[in-house]
Amino acid sequence: MAQAKLEADLRDSVHRYGKQIFSEAEQIRILNCMLEDAKSKLAHDSDIFKLITENQLKLAGNVNLQNAIIFMNGFVIALEALDHKGQTVRYLKEHGFYRILYRNPQIKGFELPPNDALNKLLKTGIIGIVVSALITLLFAATAFVAVPFWLTAITTGLFIGASAYLSGILYGVVNDLFATQSNLPYFLLGHQPDQLSLLRTNDKVVQGIAWGIAATFGPVIIATVLFTITATIAAFFVPIATFIMPIMMIAMPLIAVGAEIYARKKTRSYIDEMKDFTFLGSNYYQRRGLNYMSPTQQERAAYFGNNDRNTFGFTKVPIIGLGVLVALIVLSAVNKFLPPFLLASPIIAIAIPAALAALASIALLAAAVYMHVNRNKQIDNRYRLEFSRDEVEPNLYLDEDMTYVETLLKTYKLQEPGVNLESTEQIGTSIDLFAKNLPNKPEIVETNSQALEKEKSVTDESMANTV
Image 1 (cartoon, rainbow, N blue to C red):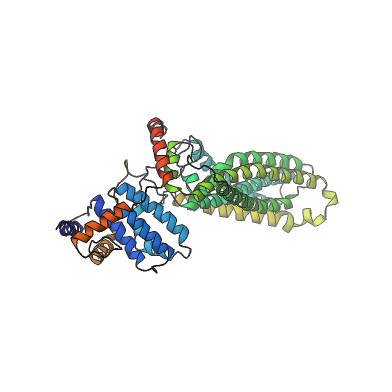
Image 2: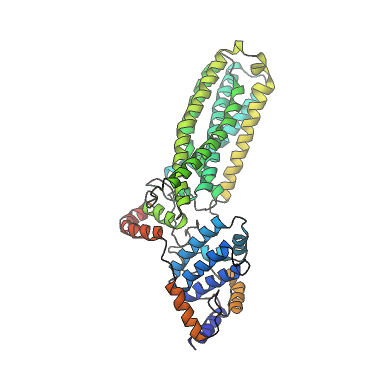
C-alpha cells in the first residue's frame, strides 16, 4: 500500500499544472531511472554496466539530494574516463542527463570586479592587438611608397615592436588553450589568493583566450617597448633584419607546445609520487570549486601541472625573446656580410614579415571577438557556476525533459531500477539491501568538506567585500 501511494503521488506530481515539483526522493529516483535506461543499452559484463550498477546502489540508499548530486558528479567523472568510445556519455547527453544534473549549479560563482587588474589587463591586451594590426598596415604601406627616411625608420621600429607583441600574445593564448583543456578550474576559479572568476563562462576555449591575453600582457608589453626602442634607434643607422621576426612568430607557439609536453610529464610524475592533493586552491572559493570539479588524482595532478607550465613559460620565453633581440641587433649590424636578398628583397624583408603579422592579428582579433560573444556562455557540465541567482537552486533541472521523465516513470513503474520488484514486501527488502551496500562518500570530498567548513566562516565575509 505504501508503494502504491508513492506511485500515485509521483504520477500526480508529473501531471501537476505549471512547473513540476518533485521531492528529493522522487528526484533521486528519476536519476536512478535514467541510469537504468542507459544501462539497458549495455552488455551485462561491461565495465560501464558495472559502474552504473554501483552508482545505482549509492542512489537507492540515499535520501539526500545534495549527496546524490555529488555521487552523480563522481559517476560522470568516472564514466568519462572509462567510456573511451563515448557512446554512453553521448547517450546520456542526448537524453538530457547532463542538463538535468548540471543546469542548476551547486556552487555559487563570484566574479572579479570590473576594476580588477586582470580585467584591465585583458581589455588593454585586446587594444594592443588592434594597435599592432594598424602598425602592420602602416609598415606595409610605407614600405612600398616613397616617404621620408625618418618615417621609414620609425615605422620599421614600430613594426618590430608590434611583431614582438603579437608573438608574445600568440604564445599566451596557445599556451592557455592547452592549459584549460588540462584543468579548467585552474582558470575558471582563479589560482592566486586574491582571484575569483575572470569570466562567467565554463567554455574552455573562451577561458583560454581570455587568460592567454590577460596573463601575458604585462611581460609582453615590456618586451614590446624594448624591441621598439632598440629597433627604432638602430633603423636610423643600419637596415633592420626584419626577416627574423617571422621566425620568432612561429617559434612562440612551438614553445607553448614544449610547455604542454613538460606539464604532462610533471603531471605524470605527481601521480607516480602519490603527491598530497588534499588542499588545492588558494582560497575557500577555489578549494570548494575544485573539490567538486576536480576530485580525482589525475585532475588534481593536472592542476599542479599548470603551475609548472606557467613556470616553464615565464622562464623560457624571456630567454627566447632576448635571444631574438640580440640576433636582430647583430644581424642588422653585420648586414654587409649577409646575402643581399635577405635585406633587399621586398618579399623576404617586407611581404613575409607583414603577412605573418597580419595573419596573427586577424587570428587574435577573431579570438577576442569569440571570447567577447561567449563570455557568459554556460555549458551543462560540472564546471558550471551559479552567477544569475543569489542562492543556488538545490533541485534538479527537469523543465525541458518532462516528456522523457514521464516515459521513464511509466517504463520502470517506479520500481528500483536494476531490480525486478514483484511485491511491496520485496520492495522494502531490496531498498534495505541497497542501503546496507551503499558505499561511503569519496574520502577526498569528506576530508576537504570538513577542512573547508572551518575556513568558510573566515573567508565568506572577505569574499563578499571583494565582490
